[in-house]
Image 1 (cartoon, rainbow, N blue to C red):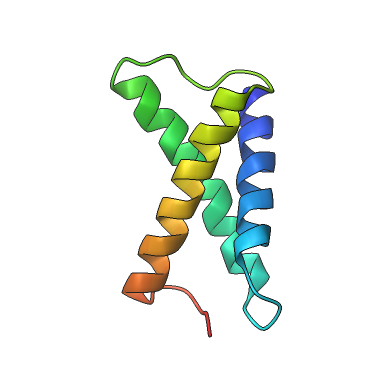
Image 2: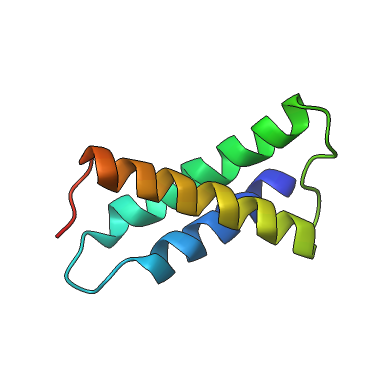
Length: 81
């Protein structure tokens, strides 16, 4: 269930940061990947993992999603205009 919540938050963040002229599917996908990656990273360094529908989970998902989307755009690895 926690993975689904992270995926939901990541997808929402990806959708919110995309512009109508951009490829929203890539932004949503990168948002989901970023949310899952950030949760895994937080758990790996010893902090409590994102669990349930909490503000902490939202912040972890938001941070990871924005970071991955930014990195992807700066490396020009996925389409955007």
